[in-house]
Length: 574
Image 1: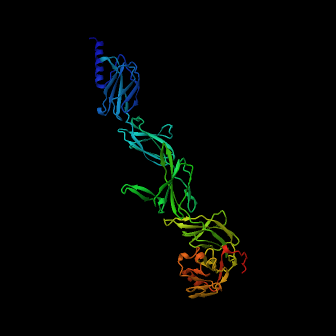
Image 2: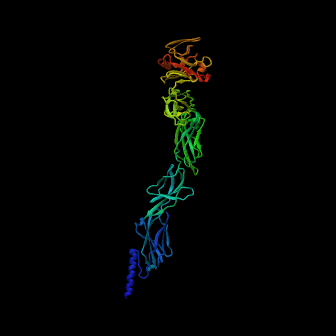
């Protein structure tokens, strides 16, 4: 055997040994180059696609695969006997499982093949598509999502579109969880989402399919500045600021008024009949406003002096579904009648008096130096007169008086409307048409009310019953208390009775005295029009007792009735 033959036998043996030990054969006669750009060019949950550039001098390719089932060892996987084939799809894969592939070019056939060095790529099959994507919750600025776990996935990518025909954009990657809360959104806005699972290997991600798409929307913003703008005895008007892009509003109402108007009849199967279900103390849906631009609501046919609470909930409609925002609440109520006030000045003070309002718990006195305000609360009273401290003489003041009642919560005051009157502050102490000192008694027959002022301060205020109208009318004018007795016997043409306290006013028998035969509710109002006295001023026992103790003989008494006064003579000098 010559040396050349020996040399060929040695090389052939090395190639065989090399293939069996290393999987690499080097040809001394015809070198085979490695392929270029060996990569994983596509993955699904059921396949992995490999691609490469054609190898120089290659007749074909051998592909090896390693995975967890082989403990990472590469085994021959498939052979491609055509060098023009530059793609291979592996369909024998499991979702989200990692695989490593090697490829070698070869030329020749049988035992005379030459192999290139191996090119390696690490990849993975895609996870299965996410399932059961759903909106867990949403509000005006966020949407919370959840979905079913995709086994083996490294994480998830969330995509969002801001319009029905818009493009989906990636907004985040999520790892270690199947939940995501998308924050910082626009209120009253349409959104749609889908979530893609991925498996990451060597910094490269294999993505699942698109999966479920969910459409949703954010809620409208809570309305602002909810308030009552018109209060009447039988209706209320509330208003609020527009909630941007809202489709409309739902108005809920609560009342503590026990009547059928606040309830409903519901069929009760247990008794086979309709039963009344009260809604007292509960919020019930009362009105739906299908216009996001309309921001007022008037509730009519209400009960006078009744407290009501309202909630306004904005809504946004998208794809036939309603998304509701948070409510804003206001407590209010129908009002009492508006006080008819008379405003005047005495002794550098501004005074107002008014007829009592049925159901009022009190009155609030407001004053301003300008007709347009601002008006400041000076104080409250349960009386029908209010007297300020001394003010600036010759200055004009504007007055408003609101009646109020306390709502069922024991705290909220429901105020009536008001009328504005004005007066100029004067140092004179003028009562009706008469100038008097700062200690005096005033009796208004129209109002059926009496006041006693002592040194400019109100001491006694009380409703009274005076002489029967158009029959035994009480005499009007300026008088003085000229006598006091306790007790006293009153004798007349048809009466002979004893009273506990008597303050004589006129010499023809008119005076101020108690009338214990009258009930409390008889004083004031219109009792004098059908059950008036014989001309005296009938007064509640405790009030006349106080006056008897404090009023001195000689105290001026002004009695007047504006509604019947046709004498315009000015008696200010009397």
